[in-house]
Image 1: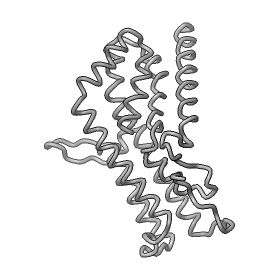
Image 2: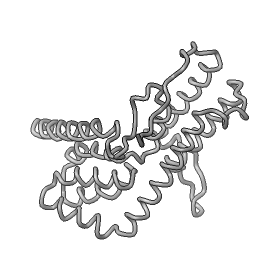
Image 3: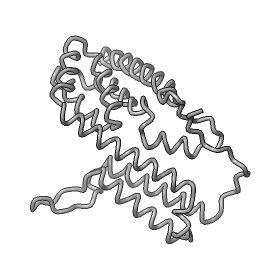
Image 4: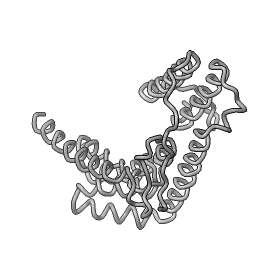
Length: 236
């Protein structure tokens, strides 16, 4: 049928073991540390950059932290390292990594090469109708599969146009456009790991399980955000 479908489960889930609980706790600690480091930059390790101390970039800190967490899980949860590469989850994860980094780098390279045409063109549309900032965020996020790339490219245009911070914050959820095309690593991993087979990428590619939720979320989140920003702005 040309569809990518996860196989159905052939066994019941077993209750969590002590080692499983330890690994989940270590993973949660890693996530909480990353959140805290994002909120409080002073928690980030200091490194020398061009002869000056600077905090580690958050994206790099995420990779360092989660690799450290993975090593801790192997050490303290009695995981056999040799068995990791034989698991189906590892295969799914590697497919997601290749898709995420490969497609994102390719898209970012394309955007960088044609940044003047793409960003300036979207900026011209935004000048005529500020709500086009949300459309631009959605489109760039879909093309780059990167929310940060869309944010760094489009939000400065909104600032230059003099839009209120509340308005820009209301339109930012449009970066959910990363899920418009089934090229995001998390999407592929979800399809691979879904044991029910209900999450799939259709034979037409664009008809995947994430399409409708993505469009609904973008419209509802941006619409409600703009409404709230108007209410809050009027009350202020």
